[in-house]
Length: 52
Image (cartoon, rainbow, N blue to C red; front, side, top):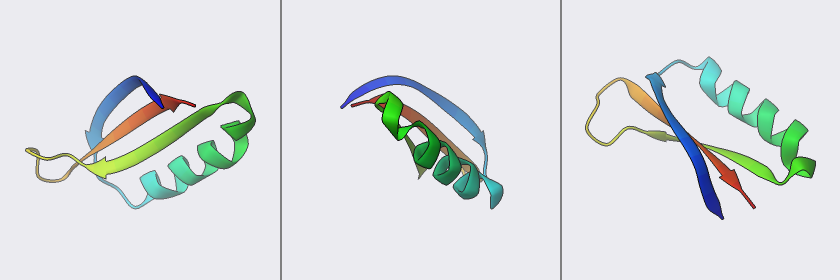
């Protein structure tokens, strides 16, 4: 997988729902979204967009 881009944002419960929604609806376009805790930023999440 190739990383297309990343975005740092404030952690909220809705982010998991958003990433799940995007992955279910865009998998046919060969893109996947990942969500992880930002390593050096407490309270922040990192959204990563991949091309498969």
